[in-house]
Image (tube, rainbow, N blue to C red):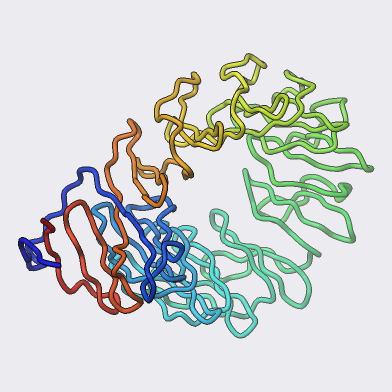
Length: 406
């Protein structure tokens, strides 16, 4: 193929106008199924998958981290977890390794600490990748504020961010602190302690959850209810289950039906066939296998006409009808038409959608801001990425040339 212009990478300019990733299969080259760009931007970076391996691109479509990893998490607070040969490590946005890919298990950073597992034991890293709390624990959980759950010799306690024990491991099990209290189990029963290890609610619950918005779901004598931080039940009704409270409301489930309960213990909506709590004060509900949205008072805001709906992200929710996806706002207005074969959720102001073998990244107006294509001539060693009218040639993960097509 002849190129009209060859550009040295230093002077490469990539337009943010509409770009497309068109994939065609050909013998001896990478097939269409080897490519996947159906991921979300997080922290300014987006995963891509080529030939079974993951890498990352930025919002200009440049592959900054080569597709060399068997697994990759999304970026969060500047770090992503990657895996090769069943070992995990962290990478930075420029592709530099914060740690070697050597750990048996890793979790995302919570503040300046991240949980790791090495040689069968758990410890914690700092944000420089240093093992600042040695891997001496049998089990551990990520830090919640300034305390983390750990276990030694089969018993559970808490440490601070310096690794110093603040509550000795004397409990059978524990969950993290939330709103000043932590559920802990002793002799088969759950109670609640404060950060000074004082028992605030006695060990009498069969199951206990963490507090959120001052409310926890517990099972007492086989009955599910909700309590406040004084241990008082907020309702006389019994439920099979109650979700976490969000903005003063939660889903409840009883006798095969869903409802919505408020933080006073009053069931505001009952008799729902299926329901899912959304993150903007709305609830997705199903009627006759079709989905819509209602308010916490039961007012129908979006008529159930969709075969599936997603959660609201950045003001828009993914919906499906007749096998095609698009996006609506909380009033049910179609903002992005239902024409796509697949779609993700909005994140970082963009969303990935697929139409045929083409991936696009849209803004919240539905404008095609970014997409790119794996050229049909691509091989395992030489990846040709088309961004708008620009072809980028990567060899062994490194950008070799950038050229403009005719």
